[in-house]
Amino acid sequence: MSRWIWTYVRKYRFFMVLGLLMAVIVCALNMVNPMTAGTIVDRVIRGGERALLPKLVLLMVVTTIVKCLIRYVYQMIFEHVSQNVIRNIRQDLYDKVQSLDFSWFDRGHSGNVMTLMTSDLDAVRHFIAWVIYMSFENILIFAFSVSLLASISLKFTLMMLAVTPLIAVMALVFAKQIKPAHMKTRDQFARLNTVVSENIAGNRVVKAFVREKYETDKFMKENLLYRDRVIEQVKVRSYFIPRIDALVSILPVVLILGGGFMIISGELTLGQLVTFNGLMWALSNPLNMLGGLINDAQRFAASADRLFELSRRESRIKEPEVSSLTGRARGKIEFQNVCFSYGDESVLKNVSFVAEPGMTVGILGPTGSGKSTIAKLMCRFYDCTSGCVLLDDHDVCTISLETLRRNTGVTMQDVFLFSDTIEGNIAFGNPDLPVNDVLEAAERACADDFIEELPQKYDTIVGERGVGLSGGQRQRIALARLMAVDTPIVILDDTTSSVDVETEEEIRASIESTSGTRTSFIIAHRISSLEKADLILVMNDGEIADRGTHAELLSRSGYYREVWYHQNGIELPEGGKR
Image (cartoon, rainbow, N blue to C red):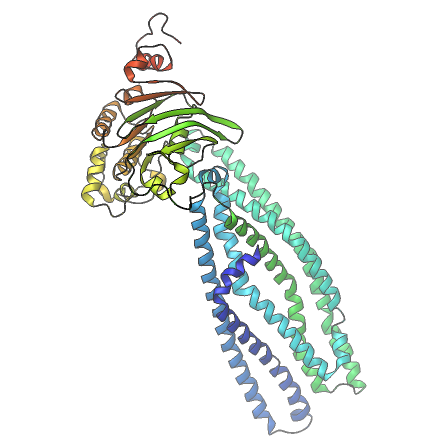
């Protein structure tokens, strides 16, 4: 909550206190000119003390200049503090997002994260840079002016303050009602951002399926809802703030009528009335700004609540206190009765196998059979529901995530490239990789040929998510990125699905050249990618339905044999179906 924000502000408390002390000085100086104006009326104009006039005018000029200079300094202090606080919060939240596990990203919405990092943080910045000192300043101005005016005429001061209790009550009710309105507006803005970010990322799919009208209507729906939320928020403000302003507008009437009668009765001098008139803004401005300041404060509170929620979010993947494995692993992987569920949906059921160092393991099965989940559990992107995954006979839950993932290289089904050069994308896992090693990795992934044909070759900037490259080109760059890191375990999740057969042959030969030195897991739909594997696991409905070498699996009826015949265009022999 908002208290959490103060842990960041506390680092700059010296500057905050300095700024507030300077605000006290400015507030005190604000009292000087109205008092001086009253003195000029009573002593110079009415009393005839003309010699005082130059001194009093000089005092007003100097006071105005000093006040402006000090106010400029403390405004800059608060702005600098706010920018530093926001920088630190933004960095910590970004680090927090980086530390969260896959399950959070599965549930999270990119639009909500973008809203947190932009709109919500800006509400915090505005509160620190403006609302704090304005609230403090207005409270002090009100207090100083009331004290000063009471010393002149307590009766007239109480007459001027008669409407204050009503304003205070309305302000409290306003504060209670405006925060929920801000929360609803903020959440709807996050949903609007989600629609926009998804549409930008998937614009090619939208155009391919001629769904522009549908997406436009979907955006219009969320946009209208955002408009309605803003209008609801405005209605709350419009109900209270004009009423507060109307009560404040009574002050000039009290000043003219009450002050006039008190001058006639001799209870006030004309100069004192001038002082009251000069300080009327010191009463009316704080009361006028009360509604706006409460509105900004409640907007800050709503945003701070959301930011605090993210800051408290913990990854479900917990780091061990001490890693049971350090350095480079041998590459032995073992699954022992592994079960895994996404919520209530069972994905893996009692999966057990052993991959010795240097083995190549192929994984085949229909869509949704749990192939990719095996890879994600090896990298500990998720934890098993039951059973355990072992690396070199160590439970992966007892190995630090950095050690585990530095020993495990993986290419995902959904290839992601950054808006960077091709060289930068290939060297992503090892930024210090020499250029020659980048070139070698690209050659082994059969990506060198098409890269050399690009205008700027390896310095070519690829678009966001690899836009501008074909699916096969993106896959080959992702494979080069994997080959550029020297890990004892490599996982290729459907890596060659978008390349032609000849390129697949070359890539397979490159992968086989490292067999014996790396434990390789090849997840594929093409049996040609798995034929030379030492062990092939056939997955079906989350279970290992069959296992063996290529020859062993072909020798018996089952899914593997059926798929092999189908992919080779050969009719199954009679009785060969499952």
